[in-house]
Image (cartoon, rainbow, N blue to C red; front, side, top):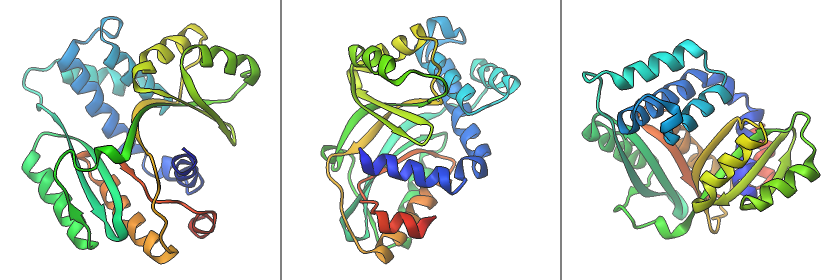
Length: 247
């Protein structure tokens, strides 16, 4: 948990959220499009779309962009996306798990293979690394005026396994099967998360020296910059010393 949260903190400190805002919007638009094609354009009857819209609002996406994305998903001639995962190893045995949303699987796999090769890693077979990660619901919530004691009591009842406060952001983690219950609880409390999604958190982390870690992080940056790749998960241990060098 701590490694995952530290990486989130590093990205916030580096200002990557603002620098990659258009990339974030692109991923959310894809998610909205897929959600509409899967369950229709009415968020009241489509939980996946409702979640995607919530994440769009959390990322400060303009309302007109959300509307266009919903309309795009309703267009029969719009691109058909498929969701697929890929797994592999970066140098020094660091596991990488990729979730992709693409309209061209051949392009996606070709790019992923080239990224691994460029940094001395290797693409594995699907399912080969699943055992290294736990699928968890992760909710990032601005603290604002939330009373932490009262909030903790409410979310524990809804299945919270872990609650952490870093700077002004509360991170709540649940079991995968409690994701929907937690989303409903937050709606009841009138709390809108900045982001809510199922993530793959490493069961154990791999520690390497700083130079090797920086090489792995450059590979991770390549994956994150690829439009076909929605989420990148890894088990690299992010030490305090590395964090200081990254700031």
